[in-house]
Length: 583
Image (cartoon, rainbow, N blue to C red; front, top):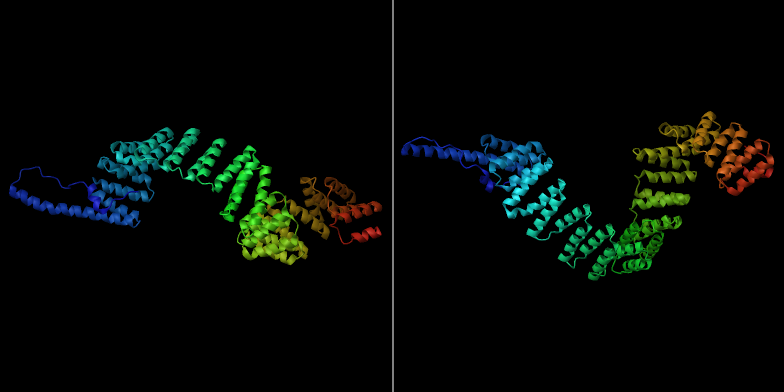
């Protein structure tokens, strides 16, 4: 926004405020009148200047409301003052009162007859704010037509043409500005955007060539041009531009990476590898830069398996060459995890975390892999280490609670889950998961009422929560409590999941406890048929059901199978040895 300085304010004042008396008077009377009139005129100008100056002071103090009051007083006293109208509109603009500012800005231009360009620019700005683009265009066009030195405003006019969806007029105006002032980088880029939107790729490339020609030693222009070509499937041309950049400076990592990706797309893996080797064998490049470049290449390669293997090798070499760089270790860990090499990935994430403890995401990756690897001791240690750094992260407390639960440290598990709940109150999904696991932990402690309350809390908001329906009904069956509720929940569970061996086993065991052995057998056999790798628990349960149905020999066979699978009760060996049931 443009403001008037005090020294120039008179430029915009209307000269003279009195009226000439159109009558015949004597010279002596004329002299007397003149002497009387002069102090009045000077006094009026003084009041006008004082009010205007006070308004400008408030504008400089960023108090536009107070400034407006002063300018309005000037307008009331001297309604033909264009400067006061302009200043009042400026004060309103500062208050974002566009509609109120518009008539004042129009009046300023009208009174000034368009001679002051700042009044014109202000009015054009207001027209643009109200999306009256044609009106704004007319003002700018007239401004430029009147005076060649105003051609600089052609850039703003071109922008308005674009708002008004007149790209060809915008291009013509950009050309006119460039002709008058010389090549301008921002204008070139804007023209490129217009040409690309019009699908005139060749024109956009010509503009890129203009930038290169303006500074032949500036490799950034060549790289940008190559990116433009790649984005428009001009890969052969892009290779040429990248090679031109490398002739200027052979030590351009980005150029080598882009060439590597182009060669990869062409199926020329040998050249692809050569380009990447030039980057990673460069002793002048820091490890962190190499890691960033490798991360960029990984994003480019998509689902290309050969490229993934190449990236994995490069990442491994980078991690080995720079064992003290956390990002190098983390990138290698990410690629190992993508390849399903979870144990190695976890170990490299641990190395990265030792070098850069403050990166939360790495601890999350470590704990996730600990869980997938079923390495509970590691999960416990790593969660405790992570919590020393990030005690306010609810997810870390969940991992810690789970590790303690599996270690049968139920009290510690409850404490961790409760802390997670305190920190995660705004995360509804996490709250459900944690509360469900809290039910497990309280059950492990023998705090059955609290366990049931936790499960019920989840079911209130999510009645079909499979995890809770399964664990709640199974634990009730083991306790031989609320069996009708256990039956109802487990029945609903298998209706939804008819081929899930674990859920079928839960339903069967509730039926077993309720002495419906024949029906329990049906569901246990279905569980075994649905999954060849069912746990020993299911085979042991199947044996127990067969025993209750009088098929003792078959029961022992199933108990023996259970022993080979693991996850069985302490009574299993005794049942096999004696051929009898022990509750």
